Amino acid sequence: MTTATATDSGPGPGPGPALITCDRLVRVFSTAGVEVQALQGLNLVVREGELMALVGASGSGKSTLMNILAGLDTPTAGAARVADRDLLTMTAADRLSYRRETVGFVWQQTSRNLLPYLTAAQNAALPLQLAGSRRHRGRRIRAQRALELLELLHVADCRDRHPHELSGGQQQRVAIAVALANNPAVLLADEPTGELDSGTAAQIFDAFRTANETLGTTIVIVTHDQAVAGEVRRTVAIRDGRTSTEVLRRSEVDAGTGRETVVAREYAMLDRAGRLQLPADYVRALDMRDRVALELETDHIAVRPDDSGEGRA
Ligand SMILES: Nc1ncnc2c1ncn2[C@@H]1O[C@H](COP(=O)(O)OP(=O)(O)OP(=O)(O)O)[C@@H](O)[C@H]1O
Ligand SMILES: [Mg+2]
Image (tube, rainbow, N blue to C red):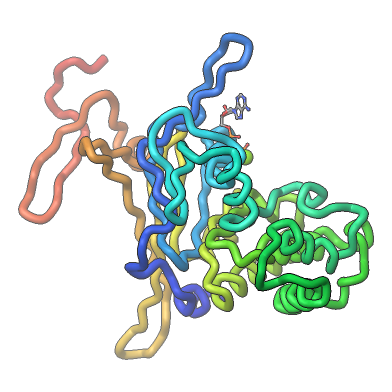
């Protein structure tokens, strides 16, 4: 894999300050008298400069979380802060400026990201015009900024084309340029490679990496694509509306041979009440059910299948 070294060369999560904090986030949808608990007390911290992936089964709550972080939906309960904005108490005006200035987003449907009657360059310049940014006042300055972004994402040659004249991969790269136009603190992408073949998906992922490394943008990508998830330093899994496990990757250099390998380690979330969710495959492997035996050792806690012989069918 060519990604081993690249993975660690980025800014990485480091100990930077928290940019996104979700604390016991709940979102309940009520439709036709039926309640769906899409998020059930989700905890998540994303630090400044991170490029991370969110994975999880269909219906686990990934898009619900992204819509909340994008300022398009409001949580039912809990706390969510992004770049010092409180997503639960924002006014409508705050919400609009938040969406225009603080976050950028890229959606799965390529057609949802761009306006069809504008060229690539006009699409990338539009957010600057809407935000009325002082730095980008004047059509020429905005056009220059838009072109710089298209160049950064290797789609400058497409600047005068309309979305229908672009491939899906080119459309997504222009979409990333649009999302980055106002230099947002956070870039959110919900299945941005879902409609693309794997080769094109890898190029799009490179575009996100470029944005992260060159501009320092914090990026959260929802993906089903294991190849994409495997390229980032941190992958958080969502299960039933909660963050369940997390994989951290780091590269290690063998002192003897100088060979570099990527070491991945799985972690579980521990909430404030001490609750822990064990990975489903671990539980299955040891046929654990209902109750487990715990033992506190000096440097770890042992979790074993219930061996009491009581209460199990
Ligand atoms: N607007 C809505 N009204 C009612 N229920 C909703 C709404 N949006 C999402 N849900 C429900 O919330 C749950 C989580 O949905 P969500 O779209 O967040 O899942 P997801 O992880 O993004 O899935 P996928 O991988 O298929 O995109 C699902 O049970 C879904 O049916
Ligand atoms: Mg979704």
